[in-house]
Length: 52
Figure 1 (cartoon, rainbow, N blue to C red):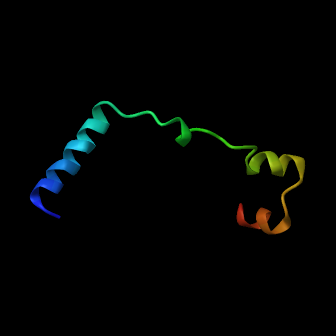
Figure 2 (cartoon, rainbow, N blue to C red; figure 1 turned 45 degrees about the vertical axis):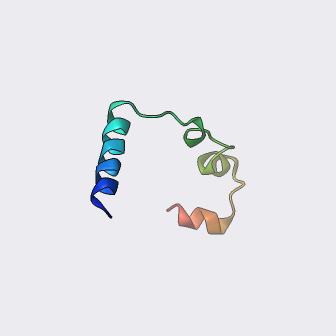
């Protein structure tokens, strides 16, 4: 990386630390998760083994 690219990267990191940008798609859950499926008993046996 060039000198200016490093400066730009650090400046962006500092700005993000001070005033983070909110992105709702990062916090949006698209459906019931694996814990819900385990409670209902609808998770396959292969998937259950991977959670242990």
